[in-house]
Image (cartoon, rainbow, N blue to C red; front, side, top):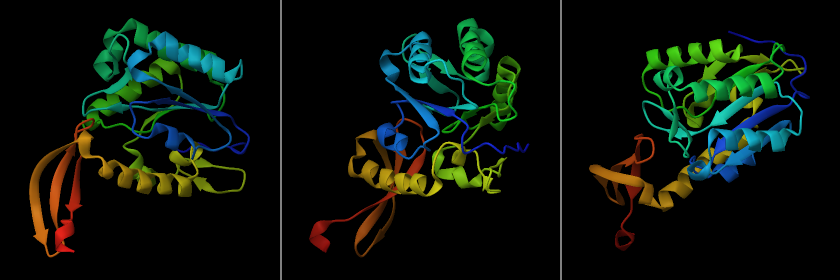
Amino acid sequence: MSVLSNRSDIELRLLVMSNGFPNIQFLAKVARKTVRKVIYTYESSSLDDILSFIIAELGGKKVESIAFVLHGDATEMYLAGVGNVVLSYQALKDDKLLREFFICLSSTFMNIKSSSARLDFLNSQLKDETAVLKLSDELHKITNCPVEICKDLNRFEEKPAAFLNIEKKIMSVMELYFYSEKLKEFLNSSLQSHMQNLSGYEKIRTVGKGAFGTAVLYRKKYDDSLVIVKEINMHDL
Protein backbone atom coordinates (compact mmCIF):
# COMPACT_ATOMS: atom_id res chain seq x y z
CA MET A 1 0.00 0.00 0.00
CA SER A 2 1.33 3.43 -0.91
CA VAL A 3 1.05 6.50 1.26
CA LEU A 4 1.37 9.99 -0.15
CA SER A 5 2.83 12.82 1.91
CA ASN A 6 3.74 16.37 0.90
CA ARG A 7 5.44 17.18 4.22
CA SER A 8 8.12 14.49 4.51
CA ASP A 9 10.96 17.03 4.74
CA ILE A 10 9.55 18.53 7.94
CA GLU A 11 7.78 15.57 9.50
CA LEU A 12 9.36 14.34 12.70
CA ARG A 13 10.02 10.62 13.00
CA LEU A 14 11.42 8.42 15.75
CA LEU A 15 13.95 5.59 15.69
CA VAL A 16 14.00 3.29 18.72
CA MET A 17 17.18 1.24 18.63
CA SER A 18 18.44 -1.56 20.84
CA ASN A 19 22.16 -1.85 21.50
CA GLY A 20 21.72 -5.54 20.73
CA PHE A 21 22.01 -4.56 17.07
CA PRO A 22 25.73 -4.47 16.10
CA ASN A 23 27.34 -1.03 15.67
CA ILE A 24 24.12 0.75 16.58
CA GLN A 25 25.93 4.01 17.44
CA PHE A 26 27.29 4.21 13.91
CA LEU A 27 23.92 3.37 12.37
CA ALA A 28 22.36 6.24 14.34
CA LYS A 29 24.75 8.66 12.64
CA VAL A 30 23.26 8.01 9.18
CA ALA A 31 19.70 8.83 10.28
CA ARG A 32 17.98 11.81 8.70
CA LYS A 33 18.00 15.16 10.49
CA THR A 34 14.23 14.97 10.96
CA VAL A 35 14.57 11.70 12.89
CA ARG A 36 14.75 11.65 16.68
CA LYS A 37 16.72 8.73 18.11
CA VAL A 38 16.45 6.62 21.25
CA ILE A 39 19.24 4.10 21.85
CA TYR A 40 18.72 1.87 24.86
CA THR A 41 20.69 -0.89 26.58
CA TYR A 42 18.79 -4.08 25.90
CA GLU A 43 20.05 -6.08 28.88
CA SER A 44 19.06 -3.54 31.54
CA SER A 45 15.90 -2.03 30.00
CA SER A 46 12.24 -2.81 30.62
CA LEU A 47 9.25 -1.75 28.54
CA ASP A 48 8.63 1.12 30.98
CA ASP A 49 12.26 2.20 30.62
CA ILE A 50 11.91 2.38 26.84
CA LEU A 51 8.80 4.54 27.18
CA SER A 52 10.64 6.82 29.63
CA PHE A 53 13.53 7.22 27.17
CA ILE A 54 11.06 8.18 24.43
CA ILE A 55 9.36 10.74 26.69
CA ALA A 56 12.74 12.31 27.47
CA GLU A 57 13.75 12.44 23.81
CA LEU A 58 10.52 13.87 22.39
CA GLY A 59 9.76 16.33 25.19
CA GLY A 60 6.03 16.30 24.55
CA LYS A 61 6.24 16.37 20.75
CA LYS A 62 4.54 13.80 18.56
CA VAL A 63 5.99 12.07 15.51
CA GLU A 64 4.57 10.91 12.19
CA SER A 65 6.04 7.41 12.45
CA ILE A 66 8.09 5.19 14.72
CA ALA A 67 10.62 2.56 13.66
CA PHE A 68 12.38 -0.09 15.72
CA VAL A 69 15.83 -1.54 15.05
CA LEU A 70 16.12 -4.70 17.14
CA HIS A 71 18.09 -7.92 17.15
CA GLY A 72 16.36 -11.28 17.16
CA ASP A 73 16.14 -14.70 15.57
CA ALA A 74 13.99 -16.58 13.09
CA THR A 75 10.94 -16.70 15.38
CA GLU A 76 10.94 -13.50 17.47
CA MET A 77 12.39 -10.02 17.94
CA TYR A 78 14.11 -9.15 21.22
CA LEU A 79 12.56 -6.03 22.70
CA ALA A 80 13.61 -5.73 26.36
CA GLY A 81 16.08 -7.72 28.43
CA VAL A 82 14.34 -7.01 31.74
CA GLY A 83 11.50 -9.50 31.79
CA ASN A 84 12.89 -11.18 28.65
CA VAL A 85 10.28 -9.43 26.52
CA VAL A 86 10.15 -10.68 22.94
CA LEU A 87 7.92 -9.67 20.05
CA SER A 88 6.08 -12.30 18.04
CA TYR A 89 2.46 -12.93 17.19
CA GLN A 90 2.02 -15.36 20.06
CA ALA A 91 3.79 -13.10 22.55
CA LEU A 92 1.57 -10.21 21.52
CA LYS A 93 -1.54 -12.34 22.08
CA ASP A 94 -0.38 -13.64 25.44
CA ASP A 95 1.31 -10.62 27.03
CA LYS A 96 -1.06 -7.85 28.16
CA LEU A 97 1.83 -5.53 29.10
CA LEU A 98 3.31 -5.91 25.62
CA ARG A 99 -0.01 -4.93 24.02
CA GLU A 100 -0.32 -1.95 26.36
CA PHE A 101 3.21 -0.88 25.42
CA PHE A 102 2.28 -0.57 21.75
CA ILE A 103 -1.06 1.06 22.51
CA CYS A 104 0.78 3.69 24.56
CA LEU A 105 3.38 4.06 21.83
CA SER A 106 0.87 4.97 19.14
CA SER A 107 -1.64 6.95 21.22
CA THR A 108 0.91 8.99 23.18
CA PHE A 109 3.80 9.64 20.80
CA MET A 110 2.36 9.42 17.29
CA ASN A 111 0.13 11.71 15.22
CA ILE A 112 -2.21 8.78 14.76
CA LYS A 113 -4.69 10.73 12.59
CA SER A 114 -1.98 11.70 10.10
CA SER A 115 -1.91 9.92 6.74
CA SER A 116 1.81 9.36 7.39
CA ALA A 117 1.28 7.53 10.69
CA ARG A 118 2.96 4.12 10.66
CA LEU A 119 4.97 1.67 12.74
CA ASP A 120 8.03 0.01 11.20
CA PHE A 121 10.45 -2.73 12.17
CA LEU A 122 13.60 -2.36 10.10
CA ASN A 123 15.74 -5.37 10.94
CA SER A 124 13.46 -8.37 11.27
CA GLN A 125 15.03 -11.82 11.05
CA LEU A 126 11.63 -13.53 11.13
CA LYS A 127 11.53 -16.34 8.57
CA ASP A 128 7.88 -17.45 8.53
CA GLU A 129 6.03 -15.09 6.20
CA THR A 130 2.66 -16.20 7.58
CA ALA A 131 3.79 -15.38 11.12
CA VAL A 132 5.07 -12.00 9.94
CA LEU A 133 1.70 -11.21 8.36
CA LYS A 134 -0.19 -12.28 11.50
CA LEU A 135 2.09 -10.15 13.69
CA SER A 136 1.75 -7.06 11.50
CA ASP A 137 -2.04 -7.47 11.35
CA GLU A 138 -2.28 -7.80 15.12
CA LEU A 139 -0.06 -4.75 15.66
CA HIS A 140 -2.23 -2.84 13.20
CA LYS A 141 -5.34 -3.68 15.25
CA ILE A 142 -3.62 -2.55 18.44
CA THR A 143 -2.03 0.67 17.17
CA ASN A 144 -4.60 1.71 14.54
CA CYS A 145 -1.87 2.51 12.03
CA PRO A 146 -0.13 0.69 9.16
CA VAL A 147 2.65 -1.67 10.23
CA GLU A 148 5.62 -2.74 8.10
CA ILE A 149 7.99 -5.52 9.17
CA CYS A 150 11.05 -5.26 6.95
CA LYS A 151 13.86 -7.73 6.54
CA ASP A 152 17.44 -6.93 7.45
CA LEU A 153 18.90 -3.53 6.55
CA ASN A 154 21.04 -5.07 3.81
CA ARG A 155 17.87 -5.66 1.78
CA PHE A 156 16.38 -2.19 2.12
CA GLU A 157 16.41 -1.60 -1.63
CA GLU A 158 14.06 -4.54 -2.15
CA LYS A 159 11.19 -2.79 -0.38
CA PRO A 160 8.65 -1.25 -2.76
CA ALA A 161 8.44 2.53 -2.92
CA ALA A 162 6.01 3.69 -0.27
CA PHE A 163 6.15 7.46 0.03
CA LEU A 164 6.30 10.54 -2.14
CA ASN A 165 8.01 13.58 -0.66
CA ILE A 166 7.67 17.27 -1.46
CA GLU A 167 10.34 17.01 -4.19
CA LYS A 168 8.27 14.36 -6.00
CA LYS A 169 10.88 11.73 -5.15
CA ILE A 170 9.86 8.14 -4.57
CA MET A 171 11.10 6.99 -1.18
CA SER A 172 11.40 3.53 0.33
CA VAL A 173 10.49 2.79 3.94
CA MET A 174 14.19 2.82 4.91
CA GLU A 175 14.66 6.23 3.30
CA LEU A 176 12.10 7.72 5.67
CA TYR A 177 14.63 7.27 8.44
CA PHE A 178 18.06 7.08 6.78
CA TYR A 179 20.04 8.77 4.02
CA SER A 180 20.28 5.92 1.51
CA GLU A 181 23.88 6.52 0.39
CA LYS A 182 25.11 6.87 3.96
CA LEU A 183 23.21 3.72 4.91
CA LYS A 184 24.94 1.80 2.12
CA GLU A 185 28.31 3.07 3.35
CA PHE A 186 27.45 1.98 6.89
CA LEU A 187 26.43 -1.49 5.77
CA ASN A 188 29.61 -1.96 3.74
CA SER A 189 31.94 -0.74 6.49
CA SER A 190 29.93 -2.60 9.14
CA LEU A 191 30.40 -5.91 7.37
CA GLN A 192 34.14 -5.33 7.12
CA SER A 193 34.43 -4.44 10.80
CA HIS A 194 32.34 -7.46 11.81
CA MET A 195 34.64 -9.81 10.00
CA GLN A 196 37.73 -8.40 11.71
CA ASN A 197 36.36 -9.97 14.89
CA LEU A 198 34.82 -13.40 14.38
CA SER A 199 33.89 -13.92 18.02
CA GLY A 200 30.22 -13.54 17.07
CA TYR A 201 30.46 -16.18 14.35
CA GLU A 202 30.45 -19.98 14.34
CA LYS A 203 32.63 -21.68 11.74
CA ILE A 204 30.60 -24.22 9.74
CA ARG A 205 32.79 -25.62 6.98
CA THR A 206 35.24 -24.80 4.20
CA VAL A 207 33.42 -24.28 0.92
CA GLY A 208 36.32 -23.61 -1.45
CA LYS A 209 40.07 -23.14 -1.83
CA GLY A 210 42.11 -20.99 -4.19
CA ALA A 211 45.64 -19.78 -4.80
CA PHE A 212 45.39 -16.97 -2.26
CA GLY A 213 42.95 -18.18 0.35
CA THR A 214 40.14 -20.36 1.55
CA ALA A 215 36.41 -19.61 1.46
CA VAL A 216 34.81 -20.54 4.78
CA LEU A 217 31.12 -20.61 5.69
CA TYR A 218 30.25 -18.96 9.03
CA ARG A 219 26.97 -18.59 10.93
CA LYS A 220 26.19 -15.38 12.84
CA LYS A 221 25.41 -16.45 16.40
CA TYR A 222 22.91 -13.66 17.07
CA ASP A 223 20.60 -14.20 14.09
CA ASP A 224 21.65 -17.52 12.47
CA SER A 225 22.30 -15.89 9.08
CA LEU A 226 25.15 -17.28 6.99
CA VAL A 227 28.16 -15.50 5.51
CA ILE A 228 31.16 -16.66 3.50
CA VAL A 229 34.56 -15.30 4.56
CA LYS A 230 37.73 -15.48 2.53
CA GLU A 231 40.59 -16.42 4.83
CA ILE A 232 44.04 -15.55 3.52
CA ASN A 233 47.23 -17.17 4.73
CA MET A 234 49.81 -14.37 4.87
CA HIS A 235 52.63 -16.84 4.24
CA ASP A 236 51.14 -17.55 0.81
CA LEU A 237 51.31 -13.89 -0.29
